[in-house]
Image (cartoon, rainbow, N blue to C red; front, top):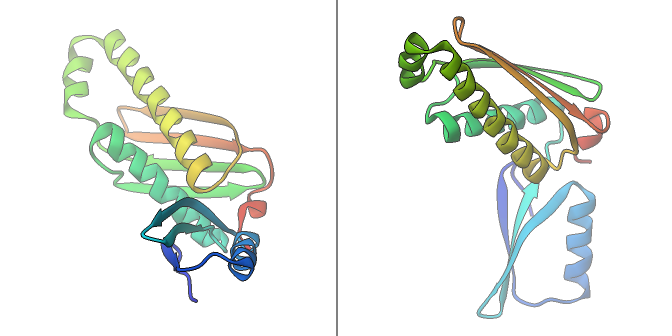
Length: 169
């Protein structure tokens, strides 16, 4: 069975010792099952595959970062660069400012700063959840700042161990 980099659905008719050994083998190779459901006697297991290379890992991080931005700001990033070193991930991203925040900023800088801080806190909360649930990172710290004039943000993510240890295989 060939597994892709995204999610796979495995269907099993009968649960037996061999099946359990196969699942154990998949999990040992970087597969993690995140969902198991029995429907009409058929077991359906949703399987996530962890990235195998640093390039795949960067792509996965960029995907999660863009997804979180879309959830909060309803618009994705226009550009992002990721650097990986030891146990740190550095993300530099360019994105448009939300028009309503531009209006608020022109009326009240202090109110715009408070709203920016709330949005950054929500971003960090959602990114933390996604990185822990989807990539199985053990995140120690997320730092983020945003320059509204240049529309560039910087994010530093500190993990509990070297990034390479999160690769499958």
